[in-house]
Image (cartoon, rainbow over all chains, first blue to last red; front, side, top):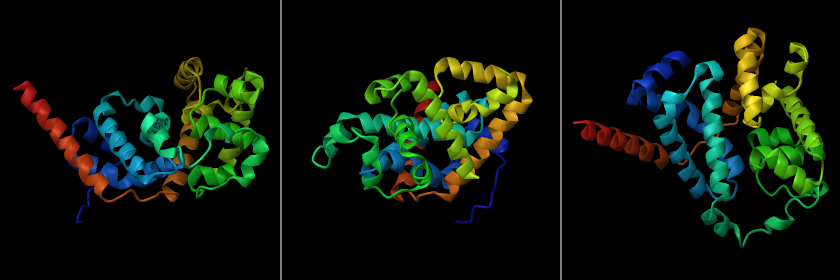
Length: 182
Length: 84
């Protein structure tokens, strides 16, 4: 591969908006690993599904690049959120859930936050690895919100804790995560 | 609430990671437009998140790239034909 073109973020966005295939190939080469990582942290058990999510994500990036607004955040942040949302949609899809049925008992998964530490059956990569440093009562909330896509309201119901507490704990957990990322 | 407290509240992280509610997002975007210091803090967090995510990259299956590029070329050709 003799590709020597590099882009600034601004230049890359401009080229993508111009529908430049070469810029898109560059985008893929530079960001696919980081985006695939987050997809695998959400769609944990089946790489075939994760590959499909990847395709969907990059096609969506291509289709929606016009709507990306630099004033609201960096390109990577925008793409990361597209990837996370697509992965969560797959996690909730019938076909994924059917493929999981014989492998686990989802109903028991979050019965007790204290059990969490003994149930790490997935290779921990990326943010999930950082998550391990949090207190269990914080970790379980970030798991449910960020990696499973439940709303704060849903989590309050599931865990039988007040909505305000869910929000405060998640925010505190994210502030701690930030410290660990440094 | 003053700006310092707002910055330290976890709203930046919550917004960037896609966990803020619709009304929190609207408020945060307005605040960022109004206070460059807040936007700068957001950018700092975005950069460290991006940095960490690229350190933790996982190589996707090799066939995925070709499939995506093919899908995009097909989409673009479809568009050109439609507009002719």
